[in-house]
Amino acid sequence: MTMGKIGMGTIAQGDLAPELLQYLQDDPTLAMSSTSKRKRNSSVSKNEDALGLKREFVGYIDANNPPKCRCLNGDADLAPIESKRLANFAKALRRRWKAWLEQLTERVRLAIDRESLPEEHWKDNGNQFMEESFADNAFAYASVQWMRRGERQDGWHTDGGASLLHAALTIFGSRTLQVKLRDAIDGADRIIELPQRPGSFYIGNLCALEHNVVHGAESVGCYKPVGQPEWQIAVMLRTDVFRAARSRSINCTPGPTEVFAIVNRETAMHLAEQPLQLPDLTAVLAASFI
Image (cartoon, rainbow, N blue to C red; front, side, top):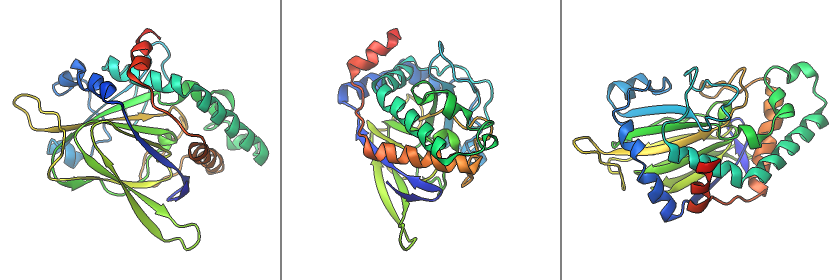
């Protein structure tokens, strides 16, 4: 845990078991996505879209329990994510972390109560923290990103409020996630680099941590559709919170800022203090019956 661009931030990383990665790589829906007629996400920059460098397909995880807000990154009225295997993975993740998410819910509520904020500070864009559990709204959305191999950078930025709990999984390809950490004493920034390869997983509150994704000229483990260029495929899982003002714009804070400061701090501390374990293939297969 360290100071980020917008408050405290924590990021943790791990790797999927090889058999679980293979299960996700063998998903026939991924091959279909390259020619999908489903609307691409509007958050992809016009330059990347025009050059065919990036495609992003967004949906929600659980068709039986959809998020209360079906809008993410400018796409309204989202449908369930096309990949059942990705949905199973996210369900298994939330099921494995249920106790951890319930503990975070209680921690956030106690922190809000301690601050004695006036009701107007949280009733419009913070009431979900007092009335709902993270066990129900965490990782509600999935963005499947197709990134064409080639040298470039995304640029330094912080994500919006739906990335209060943000998980990312690389299925194909390789790139480097750079995270900027701010020294609490002298305010100086230092950069850590987290290499992303097939099976790499990370979780953090990327609404606070400034980060940049670096794509190299070469990329190990890309997906190679017949007759198409090589692609990296990564999945971003985001959380259904701060619905009234997600603040998707770069370096903007979801409001009310007093509520964000409390919730973000407690999330960063909980992630730093309470370790997590990734689900295995058995747990993901079992999630298909949920």
